[in-house]
Image 1 (cartoon, one colour):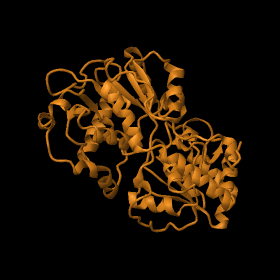
Image 2 (tube, helix red, strand yellow):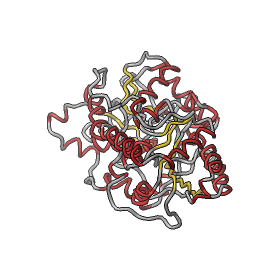
Image 3 (tube, helix red, strand yellow):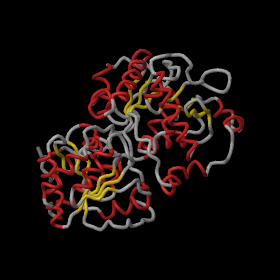
Length: 424
């Protein structure tokens, strides 16, 4: 889905870019000449990283980790119509992003004036790190698409009509060409198959991972925020279900007991409605996009993590919260429950009463039960590592074709072994 275009502050932006900045200043041509003969014989790809022009949420970090880790495979990187060795930054990035979106909105239904495949002779197989960008590029069966979710198709009420129409056109193009498609969860893969079937070159799910940076490193307190509080880390948009969470929080009366509700994330579609509700709800603290040290401090000080989303491709923030020692409150069924292995408080995201009951459970759970649940959640998180994620991607990039399941399934324990009842 098309994410928020809000830019992180400079300190968070530096963290996001540090791995790129530590790389030597080389052109793509020079890097290719420096390869050994064996590496030169490996497959080469064009990485379409156009989403980096408008995105600084999870999709950006995931894509960046793949490109950064497999430099030997990605011979070139494309950002809209341009090729760079690293993502553009600052006002230049914003200008490019706005021009790109304007082109996509205006020319989504035409194949005229497509983006250049390469600055050298010959076409490389392309890895698109978001389905949207196939609209303005040539798409071939040998290409690979990374799909986070099919929200603009399955949950049209959560997105603006223009976004829904663009993604619908993109998925129809993908269905016609039948390239390889990679998903961030089995749930997302199954949802995709409901709409577009299984007749593709391959369909593979590679579950995401908990970032170590979410719990390891320096911390930085945030002025005006003091424990105890519940925490949500997510873009400010309808699918994150903020309005129901705030209504549920108000119903519980937890504000009168000194427990606040804190959330942070980039501004997205209809963010103004969320911020207005926050201003009108006592005990709610709305933060801007926070730095990594501030985010680690929030995870360390929170009393529980709350994100009963209406739509998720996987649910990395909930997994990171569990890895940091927080019990997550998430939606039952689907990608979020898959992400945390069921180790949390599961609620009906459409029911304010169910969410309110879950918030009360986060406060009242006994210490022994809390320790068991957190231990199980952390054990599950350990099975979903960056190394595991990258090994899955390497098998795809190495062969660019179907392969048997290469990695062991993540740890999932049946729900009856848990101590927290499912809330309806």
